[in-house]
Image 1 (cartoon, chains in turn yellow, purple):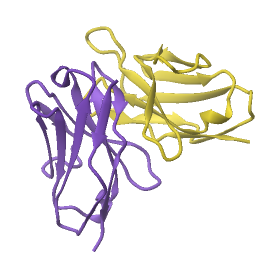
Image 2 (cartoon, chains in turn purple, brown):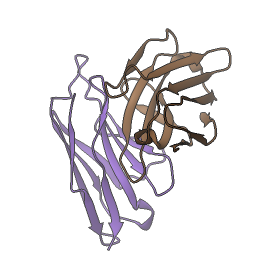
Image 3 (cartoon, helix red, strand yellow):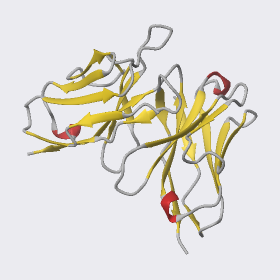
Length: 112
Length: 117
């Protein structure tokens, strides 16, 4: 199975400051079609997960442009340019290149 | 608008089975797969498996292989996830999510399954 490792596990951030979450995969996530199936999800307290980013850097409609995804191969990053109160929650990366799909362990973003 | 509406809370005894439903609306059901994901109390997300709604093809996580069956009913645009031989480790919120080309874009509201004697 592809192991997804996120860091940090906990990320206290000051409002208005940037935040960055790393996600590393144990295998290259480039599929035979040339796409990289790396996704990012946000889960606010008490809510279902919500997709933010798909194929490394494609932001979903309705997702604020302060969220951005980047990376390639085995190293990926989710950045929040200026953290707002509504960004509190747990963030997960997920690979969908190989069965079984696998999630990172999550990064909890909280306000200092 | 796309909606996935799941069945309600379940409480089961160890050794029993549970079947969770996920009714889709707002899109062509057989053009997207359905993935199932669960989340134990205070834990992260765990991918359980996927079913192709157009042909019934399935992929399951090794951890639950042999205890899980995912099915669909295209006449009602509903997906089902049945988990057998339940233990306390299966206590979790179970989510269905619409799958397309290496991602899941819409999620159900979640179904709480509690296994307790």
